Image (cartoon, rainbow, N blue to C red; front, top):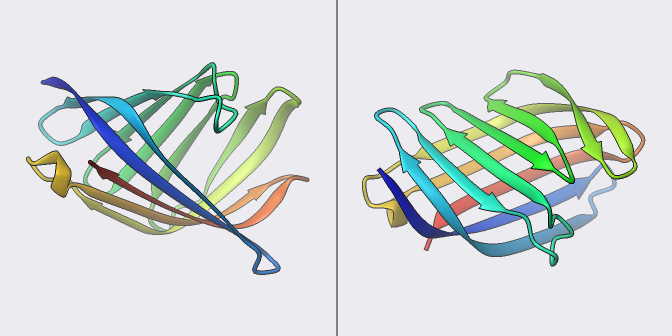
Length: 140
């Protein structure tokens, strides 16, 4: 069943020196529920400098897969303690990226407003950033 909803996404980024950056935004999303997973789709925005990027998130029991397609392109798979290497496509070119999730907490509820997703992972984008990201998603 496909439905529209609003999703709040908070991302805290902590570099190796302990400097923190917090990004919070709310966006309209399309949600498709299947038996054992949900898909979340939303478009990028000018505010986040991601206009022209379509975001697709697949949430399963223990795995979250995020795909960005368009202006910025990448696929990230978050499964606890499993290292994932990929390429992060930007306007400046393609950059090697590696993630290692430490926390992948998923609570999918039939009432979307009770659904909560939390991911904590180490990230290294070669030559750009190394540190930790914490993402929290909930429906409004």
